Length: 187
Image 1 (cartoon, one colour):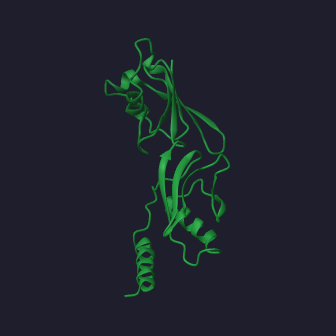
Image 2 (cartoon, one colour; image 1 turned 180 degrees about the vertical axis):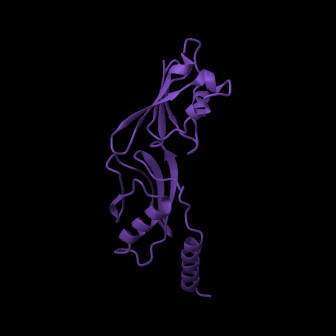
Image 3 (cartoon, helix red, strand yellow; image 1 turned 180 degrees about the horizontal axis):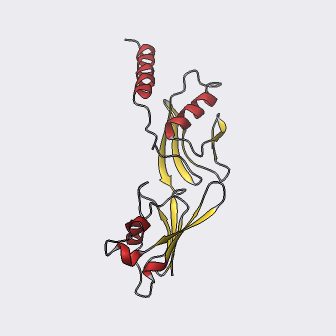
């Protein structure tokens, strides 16, 4: 089978399998600060790591500026490929997330290791995050912890966390699932 025919068959298989195995609703959506490895098949010059800029875009050779915030990696692949079609007849683009710096939570106050922490899972709870930062220090007021959350519309919410009760098995509803950008305040 000629090389071009193999390429066309491979491309068709990838396209069809992509439609059959569509991304689930919960696929990771890109955020500001995330790093991506973007590559175009058979073109080493078009392989590079890019970071999602504060305006929500990336810049890639030949494609220029591409809006990516809120998209999954297959959606970014499609957008970059569409822009490259002016220069490459059938661009096969691969996008891989190399860092999720836009996926951080901030832990402040009386904890062992305060600071910015990258969420390791979309289901990370307050208790899990407090464990990641080494727990509360001995002077912390465990039942006065607050999670500050800003909505996409800019509204702020304060979510109470009752740590002392949680570790005793009560007030379980206060063990909220964290979202990128949340701030945990431990007085």
